[in-house]
Image 1 (cartoon, rainbow, N blue to C red):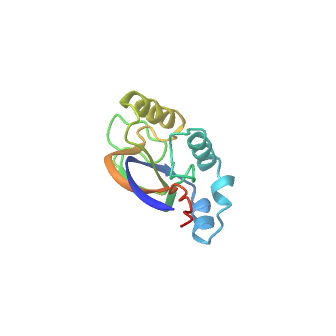
Image 2 (cartoon, helix red, strand yellow):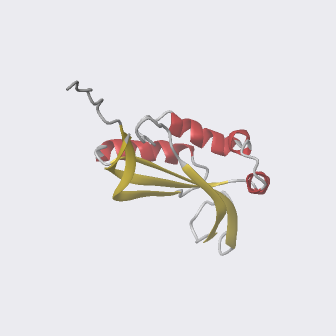
Image 3 (spheres, one colour):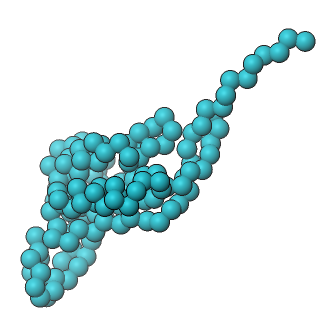
Length: 148
């Protein structure tokens, strides 16, 4: 098998999680990904999107990390967590995957909108990068045996 580089764009989503989910993940309980309703809905929505996470024979590839997101709520906001003028720290699940750079801008917009529609924050943090190169597997063509 050969490895080639292909042009992709990165999609990174910051998703708030309860402290108990963070604790479960930190202790190595990967079942917390499926048992947390928010993360489960995110994973379900993204798994249903075939354009995401394609690496040759591997599909729906993603990376994740758990951390903290900090923000201060400004006047006029309608926060899910925190209040105006308050510095708030939220446990956060960060989901990262990739999609082919040839995906149209309209398709990218629709993908991001699907995430916004299910995200619990008033203003979700969703990052979409410009083109990057990542590895992908390529099966080498079979070599015919020659008899001398």
